[in-house]
Image 1 (spheres, rainbow over the protein chains, first blue to last red):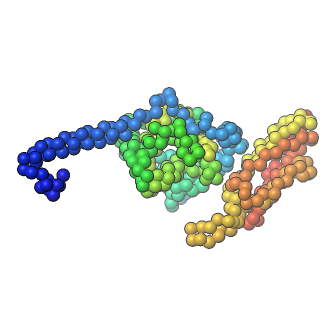
Image 2 (image 1 turned 120 degrees about the horizontal axis):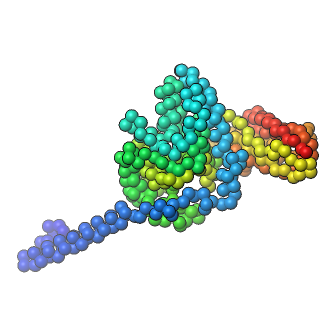
Length: 276
Length: 106
């Protein structure tokens, strides 16, 4: 209420009006808090109702994922296998020279992970080894054939393993990711949770919305006609929300990855999955 | 990095109908798209795929711009003799990949 409004009332009425208005503000405030609480607690999907997008896909797409020789992502897995055994960097060592065969089993199910006080996702961890141990001149760029191939090759070895990131150590990252997940953003003022928690069983422009569990990354997306990382997928969603996407490899994206992996805890890895 | 993936049964009975699956890494750039500067991205596709079974051509496919990236081609044939199958992909920019698979027919 502005001073200009107030001066219209007689001095007798002024206190009464003021009281009425303050009551109105209180009610409005309470309503705001209540609606904020609804958004903040927008129910997480009960653990036993969580599902991968896989069962909802068409028969053909499922068949593509089931058969490794029909799954185009296998092309990247094979490239990754080659890279794994290829000497690289200033020290001229291959991944296989340090890491024993089979030592990568279950690794993808535990990322993002903490290392030296910093949270790394699997792609960043590969690059840490590439520049740190192999002493390569430059890290693999995000979404490069090499990085996707190595991630797919490592991820493939965790197929069927339950997701189990270190919830205690990663708590700050998970909380940051949770905040982003529930935060309205972009020109459409949408939060991730509004689609993927509240309306996951409905359709958006003819396609199922889905619960957004990162069980199959990197995925071969038919729409992309290529393999892509979880961050590429997140970028995709943010552009759709008309929000400005975070940079690939930014702490925000890694935090969101950490939260999504926590949200999908104990679900089984399908890497490399095929998605429409 | 254009390693093709081929799935041919190792063993088959004579006269049995077998399924052959092939997958190859290729961008299949249509030649219709423009880049960020508005310039046309030149066409780069696989134009021909053939399969020879014991020197005899049993399958041939001409590919055009509407085929997606990483073409997956699958077809059926009758197992006649033990021998090798030769798969060939040829296309723009002198793209040529040959891969073989052997089959034992009992």
